[in-house]
Length: 393
Image 1 (spheres, rainbow, N blue to C red):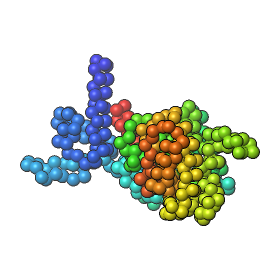
Image 2: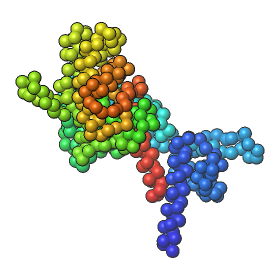
Image 3: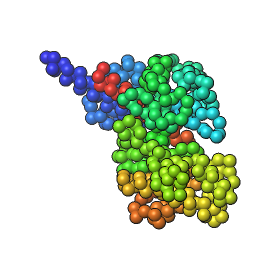
């Protein structure tokens, strides 16, 4: 009898999970819609809807009067049932203090609040700063503290989930042991941390040029740093300690260097791009300015673009030789400033310097890709958690 009871409970949970999954995706469905999508009987669907409604996950949002007979009730997920906060922490370098950009999203995926501030982390504790950002957005939207089910943080560094520690991070205070559990305790919810370029790849997979790719590598050419994200069939490769993609640290043999070694960051990082532009007579206060001006007049900047593309190809050739990805996406402020002009130059450099075939594209995401990816990752985590709760409840 206990086995039968257990099987019955499992079957009920699976039915509820299937119905909730459909409601989370299309949004508004009738009993008939759910019966068609889940292949469940009418009595079973009615019981599932009753239980999900009582759990506060769904509600009746309208009636369908376009069919014969009684008006059919239309069900949808309650957007306020769970909320997700996303925070992008960036070391702006020469542009100012590290910047915190954040957003708050409801269970349907709608962004309900957004905030941006500059924080001096030399004198401000990261836990206090991030908690204040979340509290500000929560106050703006009047969201109860217990409704924020997940906070996703993106940072320029590698996160070791085994030790809950952020490595290779330049923003003061974020490499402190115990920081992430302390933040989770302060906020009273789960906190996820990921590399900013990984989160940009999450956004690229969902919204950008890599939507239909079997896999791709995203090469981030930022104002200050480099990064690489590796997507294999929709799954990100993070490595044993979260350090996969820290391509800026890749050492290179350089006979013309006094130390006979430079890193890829020394060739293609923001400061190097700025210096290269000035060497070629292209003015600009930032690397993005320099590359934007070069792309606007490529004939006058042909030498600069060729040298920059050759440098990018050095790192890209290593990626392609090891991974052979179906697609490489160039992203980050510098890549976006260069656009199609830079993409074409890099493709030409790859043909000149490496006998490796590789499709190259520039990101089509114009919004903050890291924040967008953090919102997507957080929403996925919350929805999976709700489905798991329903299955096991």
